[in-house]
Length: 78
Image (tube, rainbow, N blue to C red; front, side, top):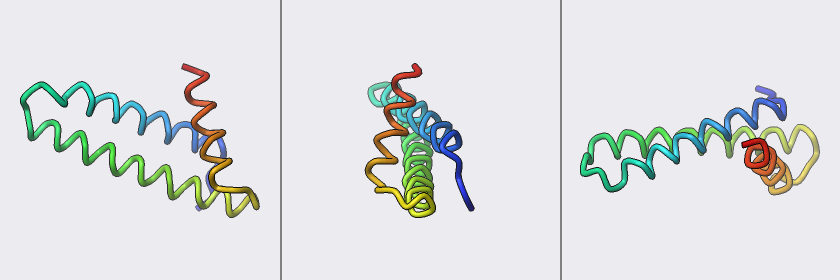
């Protein structure tokens, strides 16, 4: 499945939000909630990596360069 750059940015935003949730739950003493949030973050991050890899191959670009561009776009738009 082809992914546009905008889709990659949205996937990265979702993964970043999930990571923020994990960090917020880290010290709250609720292991089940933390574990659930951690698994969600892990799954979203894995989805981002796969989509970036696929996009880079389709575009004939370096994977690391695409990943960097996606992360910069997300972080500079916040």
